[in-house]
Length: 331
Image (cartoon, rainbow, N blue to C red):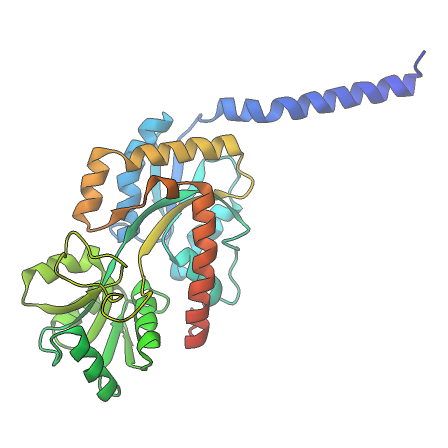
C-alpha cells in the first residue's frame, strides 16, 4: 500500500501533467478573441505604412478579427520593434518592418532588442526595388559616363539621402564602396525633400525607392536614371538596365519587409498568422496595388518563418559590414 506522501506526490504530478497537456491546445483554440494590432515603425502614408494597410484588411478577413494598423514612430524606427519585443507573446501585437530590422544592430550601440533573439518570425512580404538617379542636367548620360565623371570629380559630386540609417543612405554607401570612391553626402529629413532637391538641381545623385521614383522617371524630363538595384530588370522600367549587369556585380538593394511576433508566441498562433499573411499576398486587389507601386511580392516559399529568419540573419551580416566600414552611427 502506498504511503500518504507518495499518493500526494502522484496527485500533484498528475495535476501538473494535465495542466501542461491542456495549456497549449486551449490557448490555440481560444485565439482569436479580439483584434490584432499590426505595429508600423514609421509615420502614416510612408511606404511601410502603405504596405501594412494593404495587408490588414485581407488578413483580418482570414483571421476573423480586424487587424488594426498602429504607427509607433521615432528613434530611427527602433521604438516599434522594442515595443513588440516587450509585448505579451499571444499574437495580438505583431510588427511589420523593412530592412531596418537588419541594419539597426550595426547602427545603434544600445539597441533595446535583438532582431535575431527577441522575436518569432511570421514571414517575408515584399521587396521594393530602388533606382540610382541624377539631376536632369548632370554631365553623364549613361552609367559608364557616370563612373568616369564621379571618379574624376569625386570632391565636387554630392550624393543625397533621406537621413542617417535610411535605406537611401545604405544604397548610396554600397554604391560608393563598390566603385571605390567617397562622395560628399547630403542627408535630408526624408526621401521626399531629397528627391525634390535632386529635381531642383541642388544635389547631384540619389538612390531612392521605386515607389517614389518611377512616376518621376516616366515623365522623362525631370531626372536621369542610371540603373535599378535589383539583379533583374523591372517590368515597370524594362529599358533601364540593372547596376549588376553594368558592372557592379552582386549589387542588390531591395527594401524587403517582414512580419514578426514577440518571442515565445505559440507555434499554432504563428501558423495562423502566417496563413493569413499568405492569403493576403494572394488577394487580387493587394497584387494590383503592389504592382502599381513597382514592388514585388516575394515567392510563396519565402513567406515562411524559416525563410524570414534566414534572410534576416544574412542581411544583418551584409549591412553590418557596410555600416561599420563607413563608420556610421545612428542618433
